[in-house]
Image 1 (cartoon, rainbow, N blue to C red):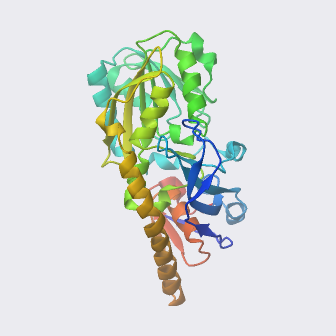
Image 2: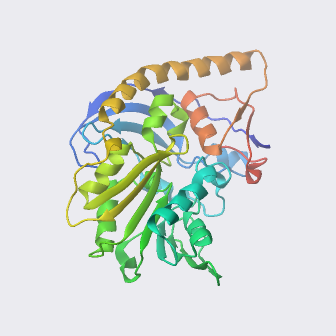
Image 3: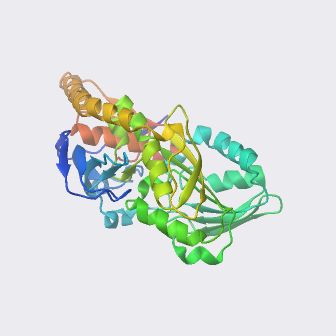
Length: 364
């Protein structure tokens, strides 16, 4: 296990209290959203350890103000500022060894290849810096493609059996319309997009009149976060949180037909398959009807999560007062979110996880 020395920071203030806002939903454009969770001074990148204490203490911070849309079930950070994400670095992928999806990615890709006959095809991968879905599709299906990601190192990988993969360090745009692709995939990336509806609209324009294009997306399931009251899953990096209903909604509303949608990885993730349609489509999968369940879990979360935060804050303060050494274990991202939400300063001595590149570094 590697060890992360932990920096100190001023105590922040976190609140969990529902109230209405007149902000429109970025996922469905419905008016009014209910604020369900707020945390101040959150590091804008939670998965990248820092080499020195001074830089860690001065790392840029933003605020979380998560709001729920009653119309589609989407949860969005209304205070997200994309300009603060410019400090993203392509040199370290902390989630590569700690992402929950890593242990399941091969099984997901293997199912895609078998079910949709994805062999010797051209694939466009959007994002996916954490789990390399395109590399797996190439390894297991002999496919070639293009990977577009703001954090990847530009390169070209060529293999006589597996095909060619071009990596481009840029955000996705419709300028890739000259590239004919059979499949568009994205794993663990859509939650980083704030204007999800606009993104899907651009994607639909990119596809144009090709009805056979297959879209394959994987995102964390927000319902699982609410059910387990895992407040440490909320961070600044992720500005968008999907339930099965809100994920299907944004695809259907923007002229895609959702052909399959399921939970995987012990219900931590949603896996969606869709194809372009001539117009918006209506819900037809049972999994899409999660609004009643989501509302129940939201009600429980806003009450119980506050109690959980108080418990851990008091517990760690007590242990620290008794001069106990405290270490938190988990991915860099979850450790940062956990400690930031509690608003503690010097109570935790170390953070520990299995990423060798993080050893001896500091949490932002």
